[in-house]
Image (cartoon, rainbow, N blue to C red; front, top):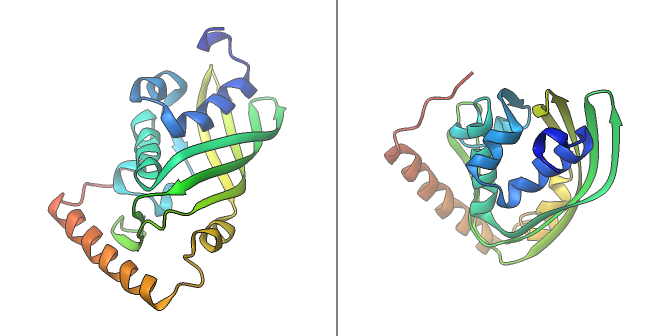
Length: 182
């Protein structure tokens, strides 16, 4: 089945799963040039734009923090061009997970714990013309934080978080703080 023949459901499933291992070429094929990810507000500057490069930047951000990243599709509902996927995301926390503030500056950093997690998520995907044009999600971030030991943090982990945040801010400043696209 070629990408042009994918149903809206299959395309949405492929778009969610390619966050774990898709290439930029995969994103360019399945994500519309003007697609918007409504979940990018805590993500790095490169993920805040529109289109395939921004979605790919989101994927790279997740992959930098998590290995064995995958989404199991538990349910899918399609209505016209809207696909809702109830999923279970799982991974192992092997890199520092950095969050960003409204100005796209590092605001939090969670150093690797080596722990695994599994949380439910709902992804809403608008599909038009054989491509994803809009995405938003509901995630169990608290469940993930508890499973990874971020909440409640131990005193030792708080120190590790502070060091990781200083390091992330230095790297961000050294990179020249890329411009956030509308």
